[in-house]
Length: 301
Image 1 (cartoon, rainbow, N blue to C red):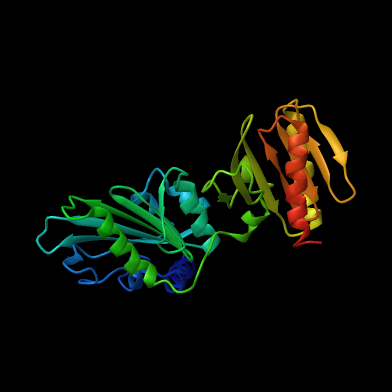
Image 2 (cartoon, rainbow, N blue to C red; image 1 turned 120 degrees about the vertical axis):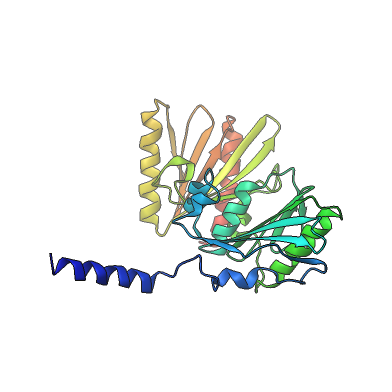
């Protein structure tokens, strides 16, 4: 027992020194929070609060699991009010693992019907909320009891935050491999884990389309090698067979496909797996697959 206690104490001290407490006031996210007077007539209502993966549930209990799956690392929250106390606003800044993860969580919460604005890499605005992403950050702002122009207040606060994030960022390049015809604007999604609900698809891109016969989706799963892509393709084939879905396989000179009668057509090309979901017309699905493969040939000839 005498030797165990010092060992446990050593382990505790080691964790304490190597894992900074995200609730400390010198948290790196503090630099992105507007200071008093950054927006004329507005000051912080209270000290900021910081969260990490261990206590994110305290702030967004229902959505914490999604944010963690999408690469959440830390969060800062702050509240602002006018000097007369008649208007208030809230700010949340989420730090994600990479800019791609920040886009992913942003895109998961936007809708093609939103009012999009040029804040950061991209943002969207409603009567009393404004969300945007830039770099590895996803910022969410809300206004309460705002007697002045609420949209103007949110834009001013968001602009202050965005100006503190260096660099220029745009939508992930992978979406350039998707056809433009019938594409639903702002429907692009990146899912960084269990794509299509399958762990063997580690991450993937998806876009919605609206055709003459109805809606469908295209997807793309990049992998690290042709062998990894083939293994994922094979496992997805087994999944489709397990669903008692009849499969039609076809081999082209450079890629292969498998399709089902319920509107799935999936292709394997080098280190990529992709496909069409919801398009029951086989000739149309084949043309969509060919268009994606042609786009991929430009980056992987």
